Amino acid sequence: MIDQIGGPRGRSFGKRRFKDLLRKLGDAPMREQEVSLRKALEKYQGDQLRRDDLTVLGFIPHA
Image 1 (cartoon, helix red, strand yellow):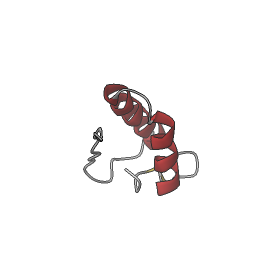
Image 2 (tube, one colour; image 1 turned 90 degrees about the vertical axis):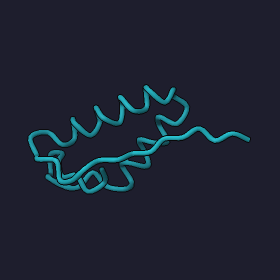
Image 3 (cartoon, one colour; image 1 turned 180 degrees about the horizontal axis):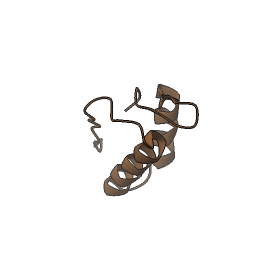
């Protein structure tokens, strides 16, 4: 996901943008996080081709 080209400048999604998005979604239910991540990437990607497969693993830690 972080190396996907897109946006107005045709640059990669990037680690910082990915981390910021995860922080923003951190308290949301897992399903909502999944949908939001997909939408954010699709919006950023725009007309660019997908560069590679995409895997994001989500988990809920238990104390």
